[in-house]
Length: 481
Ligand code: HEM
Image (cartoon, rainbow, N blue to C red; front, side, top):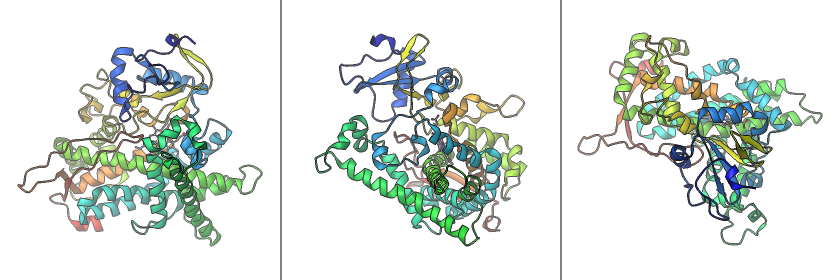
């Protein structure tokens, strides 16, 4: 094959290709930089693997949406195969199995179905506010607990009792392990897949023990909360939940009577894995923004005071009256894209795009960071400016490119409607009752918050201190009533 047929990119070395050109962390920033030299579609090679990067909304759409039939598969990830997480939708090959899983998920999380989860979102978010009030310094733990609490309730009708709850602990450990598996220790087997056949006692084979741990954790996190629902159902006291509703609806999945249960249990576990870490990252970014953009905070609070009233607790009915807050939520998605390269796709057959060859098996990444930081579409893309989403008449500007934060085409994130209502409700609630500011040092001066991010699959802000206090004119009573 003539190498020059592939989309342009930095010159690869023999065998290792561009191994030294592509950074281990935050590679999306390098790909975005390279777009200036190579254009909206570029490619790199890593140990013989061709990786194609779509740096503009047009290229990403042309490939992943218009040619979805060729680009909806995921690459095999040896570490996940070793963990036997065959219930995880995000890594399932484009197949009938994936279509069945996706049908259940899309049905359970469609915007209309998501409406019925509002009650629990309100209840859990208000409990979160109380935890913030009593222990503001632990805000990061409270954010992560809130997401675990919401997802356990939504998926299983299960109320988390405390931060040491068994189901929550197991799920948290599984999520951490899933994140860890994109780091170098586990990634070695993803690069040299034959290593999985080497004995575990050899140096550098630590990933084998990690994969076994992942297998056990995954099995337990799928099993335990599902058993809870089965048990509640047999007693006739199960609460409506994603699992309960799906079991009722999909009793007939295949001829094997246990089939429906297995699929639904796996799908629910899958949703937990995909939801908790991502939404936690998004809400942490909200706090980062509030601590670093005091003017945005003041403007949003002024809007809330006028349309809801100072000291009153917001509800979902208030949403249409708060365009500035709506713009904040859009800008949060754009400003620090938390899954900057989406989840990898793979070409199922040889293809030609704009004269370039994309070979079967090539990995294709949509660089949502580059799309949402294009300085032509978003002036000063590094600045947090909700105003960019406000029309001159004060209404909120729709921006179709924004959905690239959730991926493109058939495998677009099915949780996006839930994220939308979750993040909005947390944002309006926090802004209504708290002031979030940088923490003070021993001399009473603001401790500078320097936004930094982790560089793995899901990009989180690194820990920073902030002060969270009740706003003037807001009483604790309003929050507890
Ligand atoms: C701010 C929060 C979130 C962000 C930014 C996000 C982003 C993404 C992205 C970029 C993808 C890859 C899509 C693609 O390949 O084109 C994805 C897939 C997925 N997301 Fe999310 N997500 C978030 C929250 C959630 C939530 C709350 C859920 C579940 C309730 C969820 C469930 C999933 C699932 C199941 C997939 C795999 C879909 C498939 O492969 O068919 N996500 N998400």
